[in-house]
Length: 132
Image (cartoon, rainbow, N blue to C red; front, top):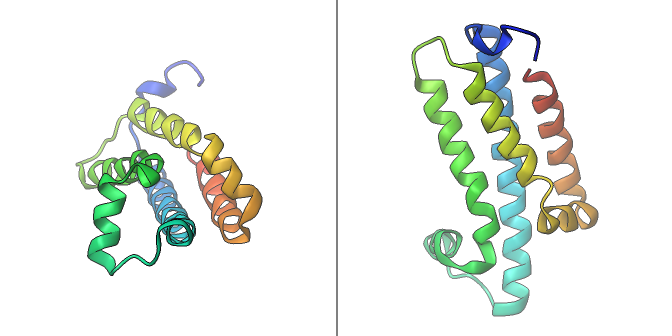
């Protein structure tokens, strides 16, 4: 980051870019849940409804690697609700955590095996690239 940029106000254009990252992350999260749900059901049988799926997402170790992504989405929602200006250092930290999530071995395996994950990943990468 150039000198002083970490202290500049987070402007309306930047806010729109954060919204785009949030939307892309939500899309990816939805695709990942569907993909991982299919894997889980192959091993354990059908999941009995959305309540059971939510419970598994929150409690079952099979889905634990998705929880940081859920937390990042909540954090982004909270950031977007805050009055301006938002601090770029907070946005940078969030961006770094998202980058780490999409570099995990579990995620990278899904990226190799699912065209839907690839498409959602590409949208997220594009949005992250514009969030500077």
